[in-house]
Length: 135
Length: 342
Image (cartoon, rainbow over all chains, first blue to last red; front, side):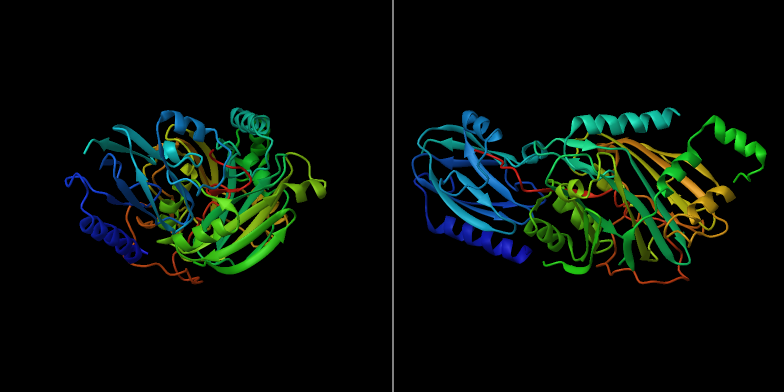
């Protein structure tokens, strides 16, 4: 399990090196690991206006989700009724031990949060911030 | 009486607070994610190298399926319907009451797949004993339609490192209703576990709770002699309520209940009360029935030195009184009947 995680994250890191972003100081390939219901990265800075690929690794035997957006977006999801996500790149469902990638292009600077909205998961600490910075 | 009223109030509050079926001695997560906890009463007795654990799952109305995942110190040799009055008799034994004083004066002596090991149905309760690591058992639970609290992966690993045996109990409320069970009816379960590793998981009681949430539980231990307990001295919400030779009348009454003929002629009764916040419960209760040195690993105070192996029967080994406090502890599971986000 740990090996699989490292391989997935290493591939994400290699991809990051291979694809130089417009703003070379900021990564466009980011690996996020979920272990014991916690994101291993909770503060991430990304460039605006270029595709950013997130590799999401769920190391847990339980389901999680990775939903990124503004406060209004999260307010909707806190009371939402959709069990599984998958049609939108900013809404990723992660079954147990699953690895998924999603690519987003952020068109506005500022902070967005990513949260797992399964019951109790946000309160448990499954929250992170993506800071979008002009290139 | 104050304790009885407290228990009664907790039960009433829980019944009012939820219309869901409940494992009476376990935490319960409702469809909205809220946790309702009934005060738990469980009995763990140890004699001749065998742990006997009795708990009850109560029907609290509603429909659907709820359940608990419980770490065990070893592989059970049997899981069967428990007796009818064991828990009630223990509560009466240690609850101060005028009648007790009167009777005492009359002359009663003071005193990955996870491997499925066993499956049994008891009334409306489906019980599965599993062997596996935290990831395997967690995946089994997820594959069987349950959602565990976010702390479950870490807690499962914590317990699997000590014993890779878990008991999954699923209460089928629809089946309970079909059987004519009424709200408040309990299904007693008697788990027999040959084991040499004493431990009573308490940390698991905090699973699914916020740090300030209250956890109330009563643990009754019956051992051949006065046991040594760890952590000691008691603190952080754990209190010793009773420690004395078991009365002849108690032993006689317990022995007359279904499946309780193993009760010895003499023994030591200990009652440990848990009245703690979830953040206080960072420990388990280790027991040495010979009164020597309980294991710091079993108490959760130290990590195991190496990968665990299931306990094997060994009557010569220092015994255990702990069992995973099945109903007491119990990782709470919830059938995935509701959706979670928009």
